[in-house]
Length: 84
Image (cartoon, rainbow, N blue to C red; front, side):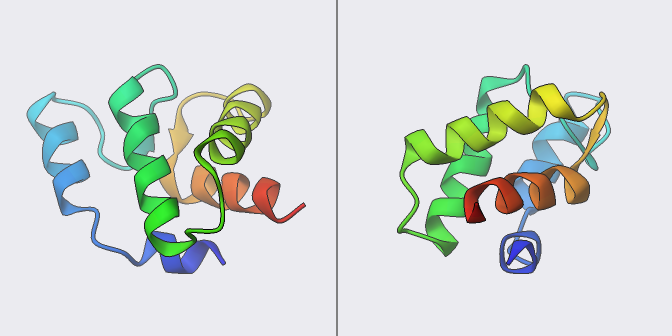
């Protein structure tokens, strides 16, 4: 399930992270644009999930995983929370 989201094109996300001189492979829960980006990415691939459901899953993963949050593991966490 996370593969569909992870295999999507993340180049615009990567470019912005690099411009901000931050590691593109880490997800920052404190950056609202990153949270919004992930919400849009998930809704694009899984339109049945509401923004509220996705935000709740992201929030849960932000508190349960130690920082920094590697993107792959973070997206896997979010998608696992959405499945339950």
